[in-house]
Amino acid sequence: MVSYDELVEQRRSPKQSSVSSVSPLITSMPESRRADVQQTTTSKGIPTLTLYNPSLNIRITGINGAVIGRRQGPYQSLFEGNMYISGVHAQLIYKSDTGWCIIDKNSSNGTKLNQRDLQPDIPMSIKTGDIVTLANINLQVSVN
Image (cartoon, rainbow, N blue to C red; front, side, top):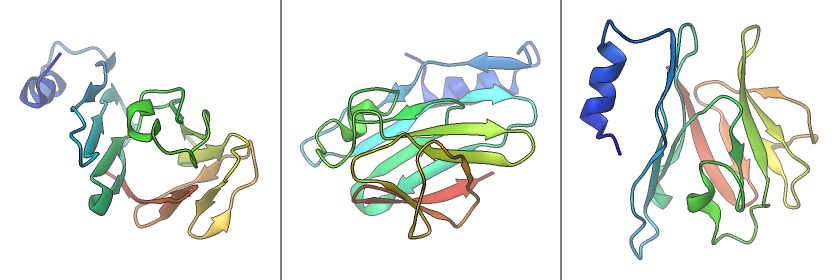
């Protein structure tokens, strides 16, 4: 496992290739269900996506192509106890022409962007200030 400080140092290192990936850093979830998932994928030109809910102590750093779900994906530990989140609920992708997008993967309880229902399998662009709702969980969007 790599510490956050080591991860930051790796990102600054001149020896770094143009694309590198570090395994997800997932902090233990105490009884309060505090959850932080951090994944850094460094690639030239791709901004960092963060989805967060401070009151639920959820913080997700976007991974291009990652599934968000109760049974699959790097964020599984955040949602495995939430029966409203589908096994494969949504997916995050980065497109060079539109930026970060979220796709509902035909989830049972839906995905919303700024209180509007998403149609399954249609990528919707997300930007700083947007609210993504996965079933019953609201997540604030930040893109840096």
